Image (cartoon, rainbow, N blue to C red; front, top):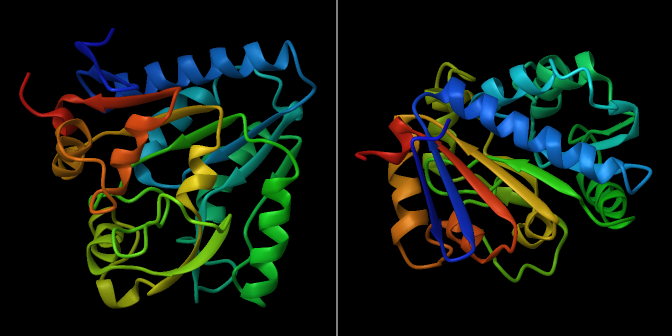
Length: 253
């Protein structure tokens, strides 16, 4: 049960007591939408974020035996450049271990950033463009980034589907704060990311943002101007986006 609900422009905001409650609520609503879509179409195309902020959501979603995952085509939204192909910090590996290996979607399209990056941009971009994206499950970074669209490189009118970006220091430090790396020196400086227009093209967006380290970015989303200085503010313009917060990320009630 949410402890607060509000609407900021188009954005529906649901606040929960804990991150576990947040994850359960988001999973229930994503599952409901996924099953509704599968009643009317053969497959559902979904993009997933790979981050500890999504863990409680994944934990609940993968327990729902009523989802026909064989009809899901799964993508992810970003990947580091420069890590070994089997490095556990790779986002593809995170999604495999936390979700895909257990639910086994009909198709899983992972980014391969270990070889010809320009060729991978073309390959993955073409996969994304084959058909529209039905559901995007995403988070917000400490600097307000969506995927790896940090403030210095975020573009609300980006002409690209997918691109290479330089990661800013706040973003790289977040990876240390999240326990993915032991020091900022270990965090790659470059990555591949889906662009903001690609993420915004999804028909249904579900955005899970727990924890006190996200509070400043969330305040900007709820109260600040829509600007690439806080890329997540663009979510207020999406026609069908739900932002899930816990007490820590929302702040005082």
